[in-house]
Length: 464
Image (cartoon, rainbow, N blue to C red):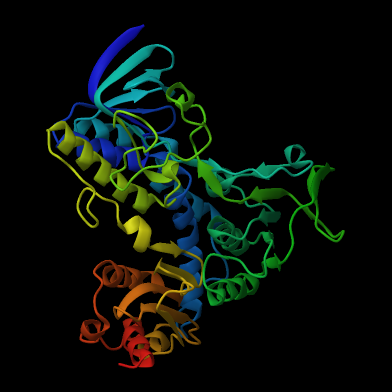
């Protein structure tokens, strides 16, 4: 079997692996990047990019309809939307991503990579890549599939099929009320599909404040989505080419497709982890430098979804930059710790993870969504009702919450819900990461008339 030696071998060529490899190369290390699918990964071809390309036209049309005097059509041109989406995903052609990696000085390898020993990665049982300093696992995540009788007998979509489809189904059921579930419900409803959203709780987006789930549910219902709350899927069967779904209590739905959107798990199966004493299928536990905790020798690192810390592309890229810098510094003989908020620690994973749900209304959040029991926290909730929002859209509806650490008088979390609130999020993230005192934040004067005026109203409601 052929053998080659590198300073670093990175498994997984999505945005996380690309960033880890790039930072290692910048640190002077010879680095190989291995993937068996497309370079650019899930986000580029099946998740973040295509889903937002599908959502944006519907959101723009809805926003235009909220302004009198703006001529708009009655419906989206699905074929044009699909064509624009495909322009972002290059129709699955990853040659641009491969060219970028090679241009960055990264050695590109295609194939299934398995860890077969200490500092050893075997690709397709043909080539052994030996890592002098580190192996970095950035394998991402895969969908969780529930164990439901009959599920394998019906036409099922996963998130990949939902974001890459180019035909509009007449009837679609979606199982799961998380981010993928609500975003795809809105996409397909606005194309004219009859959408049935099946969720187990009282509202979608259960990890967010109740008002977020309520407002998103109202937006979905306004688009014609039927939201089945406190429900689930008991059994599925195929009848005359359609999927028949049995709900708790005996009710049934007949649809053309079922999208299963019940979450994701770290993709650690098939990586050969058992060869180094780790359990396949489990997340890789890392410290804030990205070093895997349960492996002797300090040679194994991981970043992104595979760690189970924060399953978001931007957060994975952040952790990957940390890992690449750590590996390069340690290879150069530096004594690197993981001091909080240093370039060698992904501290934000614990305190300031920003996320946007790109529905209409949008949900944008960072830090805590709710006060924590036993902590000196106070939540301030207000409607987004300022001059900027009123000018932005007739009948603007939105809410904002800030969670304050009252001992230190700093923000512990912020949530916004409303049209176009994503653009408010980075200011909130900076305030949380920077631990900006509220007394100083009071002097950050929001421009008039913009939706950012909500910051002033939040601070006034708090008592400043």
